Length: 138
Image 1 (tube, one colour):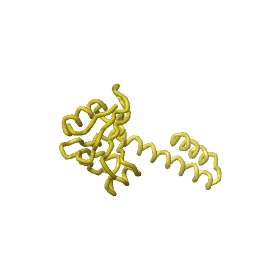
Image 2: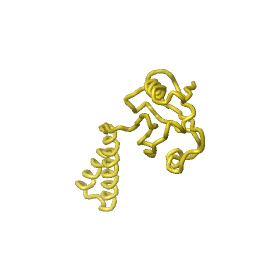
Image 3: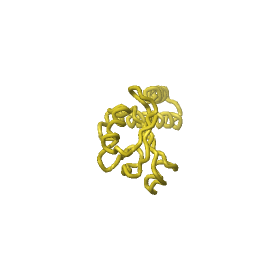
Image 4: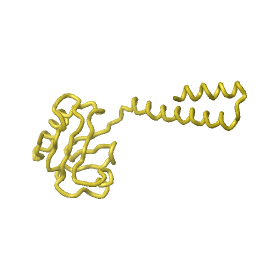
């Protein structure tokens, strides 16, 4: 889209079009260029997104709040095949304020796993190892 609006900006300048309209088309071109840069940045981001350790789990994409294993009642995998889309953690009670802000209410934390380098089955296996008291359902 940025290339298309950029082309029409240059065409408008070359043909002597009204300056206001050319400026608007140029702003659209720059806006789409910036949006494209933002989207491409995510494709090359190799930083750690989800941390599972002996203390609990932390999803840096959704609030970056540590959820201790003691507060997790059960975990459910949405589908058992490779590339399963969602792991749901049911908490024992109401979440803390910081976690509630990341969850938008409720006592279930949902973690999207398609964009991670681990499958849903790998995450569930790690949870069984790190928190054997957590029930695995589904």
